[in-house]
Image (cartoon, rainbow, N blue to C red; front, side):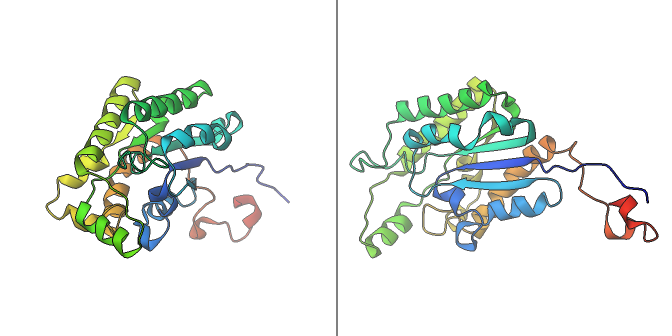
Length: 237
């Protein structure tokens, strides 16, 4: 009996960020992570490493415990998607991170990933989304958890990510400005802050060309069902 000795490994895409990443497989969170996982079926595993409410100050300590040197050879890409919490007003002392510190934290995370051998093009920086103040305030008041946030501040944190990407040479998805290109951009947010289905679709479409380039040399695992040798399936599999 002939045996196909070929071994298969699934390279990984790690999604690292805050609640917008944690919720990325949920219908209420835009499903952009699920869309990406579906797109990469039988090629890559998409790992959700999102942490609701977290900011760059905390995440920079967590990243080395999540993306470790031993997984770099099987890593197809990693997203860094933070800023939505950092950009809260400074009276939110638990989540707010000053812009200069945010910039430093994001840069340090990129430098860490490069230090363990991850090529810069595999590091994908995603800006925070645009922000609908009226919708978010309405949600916060209803839940009695009012958090002050300003659209102009959000823009500054998104701009910082643009600058970081240019300086470090990593890949960039400018979600903030991609959203504002659409007249109906507010419909891309489910509550003014987190992505709706339309927002998730936009993010997926913005990520897709970068991911496709990174995974272009990764083969689909195992043959299609109609390509299996029915006389000797083990040889095919």
